[in-house]
Every structure is written in C-alpha cells, then in structure tokens.
Amino acid sequence: MHNPPYFTDDTIVFGILMILVGFVFYTSSKEEGFWKKFYNVIPALLLCYLLPSIFSSLHIIAPEWTELDNEGEIVEKSSSLYFVSSRYLLPAALVLMTLSIDLKALLNLGPKALIVFLAGTLGIIIGGPVAILIVSIFSPETVGGAGFDAVWRGLSTLAGSWIGGGANQAAMLEIFKYNQQKYGGMVLVDIVVANIGGSFFWMITLATIIGISLSFTPLKSYEGAGASKIGSIFIYILVATIGMKMDLTAVLDNPGLILVGVIWMLIHFIVIFLVAKIIRAPYFFIAVGSQANVGGAASAPVVASAFHPSLASVGVLLAIFGYIVGTYGAILCAYLMEIVAPK
Image (cartoon, rainbow, N blue to C red):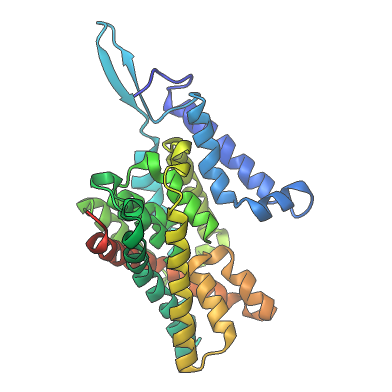
C-alpha cells in the first residue's frame, strides 16, 4: 500500500488510460517513418501494458493506496477500473471477436489445415508442463512458487495468449489469479518468445458460446460494422488497467522464465512439424497454423498472404478459431503445469 497518487478519481484515471491507449492506436497506425520502425520492434500491446505501469510507478495513478479518513483512521482505497474491465469489457470482447467465425468456411479448409493448427495448439498445451519439468531439474526456483505467486499461474496467461490471443490471456490472468505485480515478467516472456474463480470461468465460457451461437444468425453481419475492432479496443482497455497494476521491477526478478518460454516454443514447433510431416501437409499450413496459434489474428493473415494474397482469409479463420479454443486449451495447460511444478 502507498500514499494516495496524484489522481484518485476513477473517471480521471480512466481518461488518462484512454489517452494512453489512443496514443498507441494513433501512432501504431502510421505506415511509414519513425513510428512504423518503432512498432516493428515494440509491439503495440506491450506499450499498452508499459505506459500505464510507468504512470503508476511515478505515482500519478495507482491501483490501490491508503489514506486517512475524517476520524484520522487509515483506510484502504482501490481503483475499480480493472474489475469493471475484466467483468464487462472482456466478456463483450469475446462475443464480438467470435461473432465473425464462419465454421462452415473453416471446415471447408480441409482436415489438414485444422489438424496442423490443432497440432500447434497441442504443442503449446504439453509444451508448458514439459518446459517446467526440464527447467525444474536445474533451477526449481525459476518455475516454483506457492499461492498466487506460483509461476504456473503466470505461465497460464502465456498459454492463453499463444493458443488464442489477448482476450484469452486476460481471461487466464483473472481465472488463475496470478500476482499482478509480477505479471510484467510474463508479458516480457510473451513478447520476447513470440483455483478457477467459479463464476468468472462460467462467464467467460458463456460469452464464448454466445459469440459462436450468434455467428449463425444475421448478427454476424455486424462484423462489417467493425465488431471485432470494437472487441479489440475493449481488450486494449483491459490491458491498460492491468498495466496500471504491474510492477516494472518484476520484469528482472525471474529472467530464467525466458528459457522456459524458449523451450516451450521449441516443443510447439517440434509437434507441429512432426504432425505436418506425418499427414504430408504443405509448408503453408505449418507457417500459418503456428502463427494463428502464437501470433493470432493480427499476424496470421500477414503470414498467409506472403504465400498468396488470396490466402489471407485462411489465416484469419484459423486465428479466430484460436479465440474459441484458447481459453479451454489454456486451462488444461495450466492444470498440467500445476501438477508438475515444484512445490
């Protein structure tokens, strides 16, 4: 707990966060010059984490603090922005981002495309616990921990990100309650390398099911009005509120996590290549299937279009499919990591 920050009113703090998110959106939209080069190195999502955390470190804003009441007693205060974002904006984002899924078109890609994609997902699910097992042999403190500081809880957010995307990553952070002051280290691993809260889990599950169900109705046409873009904005707002709670010094607390991420990703590639070789899938499916898992909807179409512009839609379909399976695959991965993690 700290003394009150400069701004304590949530309305003002929300305005500051929106200015920061708006700055990231505006600068990342530049197609040439300094900002284009900058975002080739620093992902926009990372900046949405870092800028609020810098403001929090400078004590301009804060997730929680203490102050004296009228009777001179010390009382604990906190911002409600993260709660609102995680309980309202995240489920809405999941609905909006799965609304555009075309299951018929996805099935029309043929079995090989889906098999390779799911092989990549399987590689991530088993890669996490295997990476923990390997690292625990010579450095158990890197992958250990207890309670909400347990490293496997933080790694569950990577599983959500690498199978699905930002929405799934945020869902894992909330479901498994990892210490958010240490979350900066997990964000770094996510960028460099590429329990259940009862009611919240069911809210996320229900939101995903609703989004898929609505994709079979005329509401699917709202994608043309920018449904998934609005969903992305909601995710960026949630990311900003998470960033406000991050402790930047945590990034350097456990550098060994980078090795965990590298091993994890290596297992992902081994599994997807072996399966592709067995079923004789073309290299295109390997590249796009892997990127649809790890990179998500932002980069999978880019990789697909590198082979041929008309193939970009394949990358989009597989990446959106990742949003659907991301939460459930990450939960399974998290439980496997909990089993093998040093106690």
